[in-house]
Image (cartoon, rainbow, N blue to C red; front, side):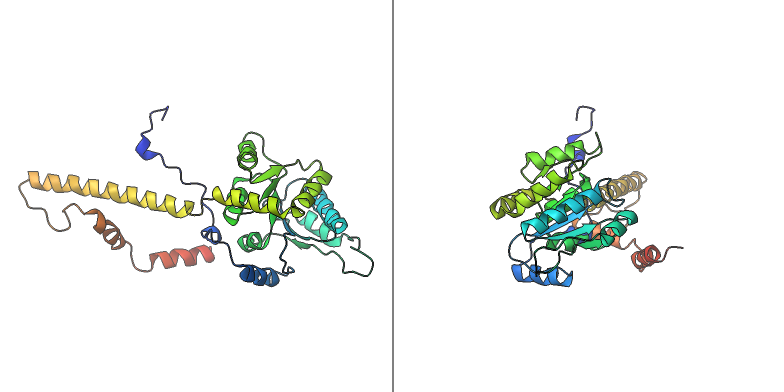
Length: 283
């Protein structure tokens, strides 16, 4: 507005996310338990599933943070850890080879789920109780939709700094630098031992969610393109009238309710399907 952009051209839609995050509805406890079981987790009533993500490349202290959280869950006596290393194969291999101490004499051994790059992160977020990650906007937007409290551990100065304030000031999480992995682990343990706090942060997170962002942006763009097409047709119709001829059906301005149908007739049959096939089979 300060630079002269008309208010009608400004829309606050949120950050677009992938289709798995378009629905803000939480699954029922039974559905969530089934999903946890399908993903190889132990179905649980209390909050205990910690999802640790390092972004596509895996942030710098991911290994130390994962080890600290795992050791703290062992000392806590309960908890499950899912680590998504992205393309950081070195960290993934180190975690897979690490010998985790036994939880207690005679009890099962703590075994975290260690993965590389995954395509169904929406399912893991649904199954988790909290998220530990860097302050990337995409991860935060997805976590808000899933109602996941966020423990942020790193950010790109300037570019992502505001994301930390967005989460902490709205009561949807906290920030502990990954240079202090033991403090990160202690904060996770503190959260898991306070279900009421977890529910409050989850509610705050969902209040910030914009699951319709991608569809809203697309809808607004298409509406504007259709408006532009109508304006051009009106100009063409006006030129025809001035030339003394009566506009034909195709030359007459469209009513708003006809625009989508009119636009659809201009897309060749099978075009979208061919584009999808090209995306799946590049080259």
